[in-house]
Length: 136
Image 1 (tube, rainbow, N blue to C red):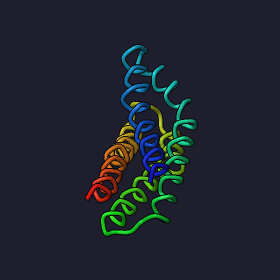
Image 2 (cartoon, rainbow, N blue to C red; image 1 turned 60 degrees about the horizontal axis):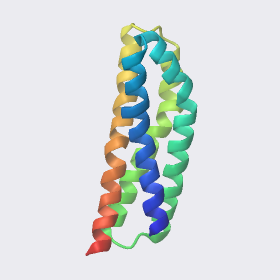
Image 3 (cartoon, one colour; image 1 turned 90 degrees about the vertical axis):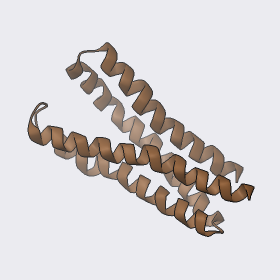
């Protein structure tokens, strides 16, 4: 279970660090348009790392699941992964087709942020379900 704890911890850290560390700092230091450009340039690395860690953590949990809590955690992790995969695969290409400041851009950006926020919450909740079960 140490491998799972490390992977899900790294996954959580990557999600939170990019969202509340990197992106927040970029938008507080640079003009909005420039911060958006830099953030967009960093997205491929962010999603590659986050999705890779998520796949590994989910695979480990898949093979080690033993209880209803593990199954619940697995379901949350799969949903978090699906949300993360949807962003670069579907949402970002759709966003790129619209100019910043338009209502379509804003709507799609909001969807992207909501999917990312879901993952930010779902991943640590899933890990807590597994950890709490192990301590019982």
